[in-house]
Image (cartoon, rainbow, N blue to C red; front, top):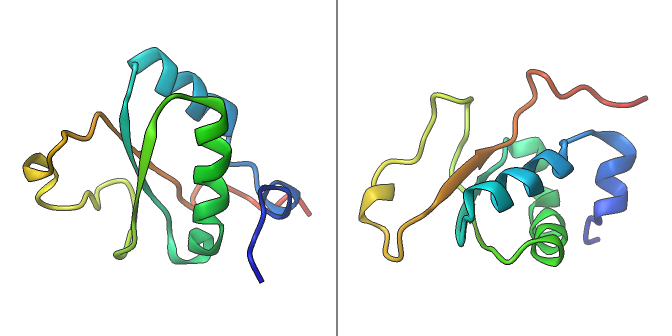
Length: 97
């Protein structure tokens, strides 16, 4: 069963409006999104939502993500260049229920 943005927003507040504002402020064209394993089922729903609200393209990092210090290696070698990396995590994200 495919997860939707409504499913996500019913459980978590990922502050997607702040993400959209940052993408627009930075004029980012290519954005890499990192999700912890528990949020990976929602990754494509988040990308679909962000694509509707911005002019950016998105990549989803599917490897492990253990926090803000866990940046993927080799990003500097990716062409075209990634303009922005956004990490979603559990530390300040609390379920709404």
